[in-house]
Length: 231
Length: 299
Image (cartoon, rainbow over all chains, first blue to last red):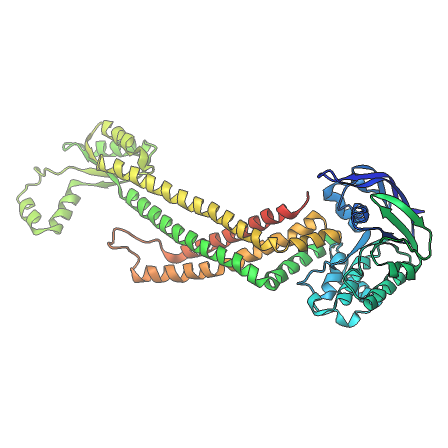
């Protein structure tokens, strides 16, 4: 079954730049997909449309049964609760502790306190930060902050995890640690879409790779190594 | 139950946020404090002016002199007719004997002169002292009393009273206008201060949206935060009002310059004023936060 279906999607920004031309894409449940391409190829626009930060100019995007293009601004939260997003710059709340940052996305659902506690502890354990629950983000290393962000993104058990260059700010060793965490999450059944520049990671992971170029899908490798020149 | 949990979390979060963003909160709080102090002072002034004005107005009396040869029955009839007028608040009768006695007691000169009068040739007249409900209509009421059969002449300080009423009316309107203008200005001033402090939390709102908070989810903690800021900001003005006004009242013995200008009793006035201050603080704080956060929400 397809978790994401994009049909004839086109995105033209108000300043006249067209970022995506006529894109067709299907992503199945449980897949791990890399989206790669040179700067300005439209990969950021592509995933921004998936979590409805941007609206497609034309075409249809279905994410987990929701027609994303037709979603009103005031209803965006319904989509956001079905997926998790991880960014290069972590986007943690600096005035909240690790625990509070992760618990936050459960509290807005109105879950009981003990249920929140057990879920947060479980997910912090999964990313290996159980003993740092009371720290504030600025007391953590970059890799640790990113793991907090991942924990926050998956704590309510989303079907889809969107990662926008999650290793962009991290060194090689830390990046691989993050990838191991993401791989573990994927093996538990969560679909992952990850935008990256890091060819080494892509080659090591041997997953599906979508190569974008100038707003179009240039290649869609089923799995395996990827050695495209010029990126 | 679920809604209650969400609400209580919102309240907790906003309380936390006041203290974790303390330097920013302090800006809003001090802004509220200063403006509420000014509001308090202007309200004390306007309430006292108002009080003074109504005391003076209450003192205005229509003195109704009755015909010298009026009979006992006729006096009763006149009273009933005056009472029937709708602007009359109270009426007191003073017979000429009472007035004579009063005047004799008040000075020896009067006594010397009046003692020579015989019982029949007392030149004074029986009077009714009439107080009115609405001082603005005193002229027409006086006219109606004058028209009653058995009434000789009336006196109420014609001309002077009308001027006084006009002046007080203007002063009252100016006071009210000032207080209202001050509150409106305060609201926008505070709202802008909060807006600036929330600007630095634009990122927070963005993240809240990202993890699936609905617009209401985002707005409520900020509105509660405004409420807390308002309550905290009104603490100093309330203490200053209660303490300051009590001291002022005691120092002046409840009057300003002369016994004629009486200050309003501190109780319950200061507590009512405190209540007004905290309510203004809360409303203005909530309004400011709501206006500020609205700007950063995509609706």
